[in-house]
Image (tube, rainbow, N blue to C red; front, top):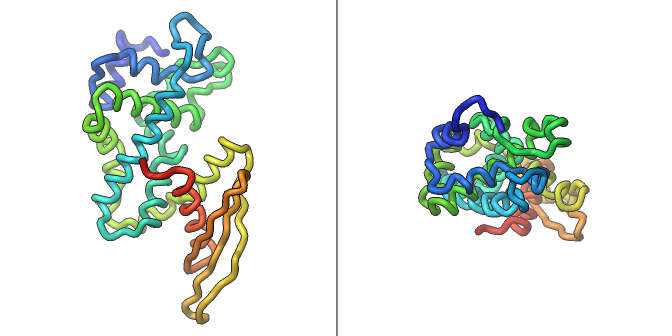
Amino acid sequence: MSQDSPNPLSDLEKRLNYSFKSQELLFQALCHGSSAGDSIYTPVSGNQRLEFLGDAVLGLVVGHLLMDQYPDAREGELSRMRAGLVSEQGLAGLAKALQIGPLILLSRGEMGQRGFEKDSILADCLEAIMGAIYLDGGLEAVFGVIRGLVGNKLPDQPALLEDSDCKSRLQEICQKRWHKVPEYESQGEDGPEHDKIFSARVTLANGLFALGQGRSKKAAEQDAACQALLILEPEP
């Protein structure tokens, strides 16, 4: 952890716009799993449990914000937008803006590999911090923090977030759980030439599959990925 400031945790609290009642929770959120037991100063369990909680909290709050911002958006659109905002890349970007990297406690080996710059570690730590805020201040507190972080990333039109896709989120989950990417296959098309509806199927390593439809093959695959995410990541 950087010692550039007399209290770097207080500086992070200012950037988060939240003051912890228990800074021990924030400290544990910054203890990457690789550091667990590496020092007498790091918790034995690391931040994995806080990361688990923060992932659920982020999904809930971001889903709420999207529903408020886009009252006419369909479920598939909302799922795609949420998947992009809470993707590894999206969360890592927020973590970089908050300057979390230099504060993360890592094992000596991970530090030597500059783990504090890895998107996966940055995203995990940000999730853990959100879990810590939830435990420290409750849902209202973490709602305010997350709204401050992502609120300005929501454009007036949901279509502007279309690049934030379910396929990326699904691939991240599959690689993390099973070390294999999802497999997509076309299921045909239907309708007149000027108004075709394409169908696609995505199959995961555990045998789970989901079907999707869209106005193009790409859109059908996106929809299938979103349907798979709804099964893997049900609403809290």
